[in-house]
Image 1 (cartoon, rainbow, N blue to C red):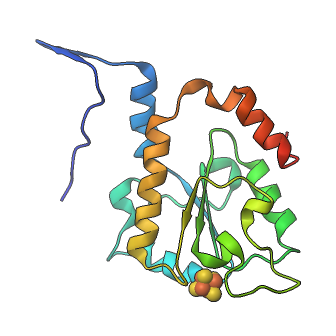
Image 2 (cartoon, rainbow, N blue to C red; image 1 turned 90 degrees about the vertical axis):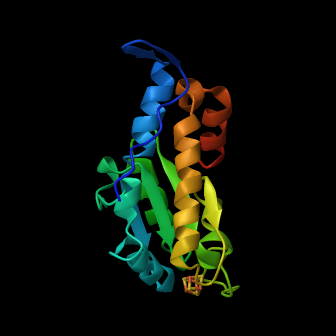
Amino acid sequence: MVEIVKEPEGYKGHGFFVTSLEKAVGLARKNSIWPLPFATSCCGIEFMATAAAHYDLGRFGAERLSFSPRQADLLMVMGTISKKMGPVLKQVFEQMAEPKWVLSVGACASSGGIFDTYSVLQGIDRVIPVDVYVPGCPPRPEQIIDGLMRIQELVHNEQFGRRSSPEYLKMLEGYGIK
Ligand code: SF4
């Protein structure tokens, strides 16, 4: 079933509708997310199930997966990330244009999971900022979709000035990202 999204808050009259540019852009962005799947292990398989016909990411306008960081606005990290892979993940994040969001899928990406070892990064938020965490080992597709919908809420309500605010720039600086 095709569902038409609800219009943002605004003023309606006979033959016209007025809203703010921020709300209109938020609505468009929210329903046209281009995810970059950064999948290294088993959670990636759950993502494949999430994107396939039964769960169908296309229902959220997010079926256009991008393997080029410059054409993606949502970095979905799924799987165990080794310390050696950390700089690669960071480089991918840096190559994405603003505005961009990060979804950490599963226990491994969020905290290292069961791999409390010398070689595994104990959470991707040690190298890049994360917007939403999805728990589970592995999370079911419903949980991944829930995470995506929470990202959609953030995208929908993002204010234009956020990415150039001193708080945001300071947070990036904390990660050594300019
Ligand atoms: S959280 Fe579990 S299922 Fe996901 S990558 Fe780690 S071990 Fe695999």
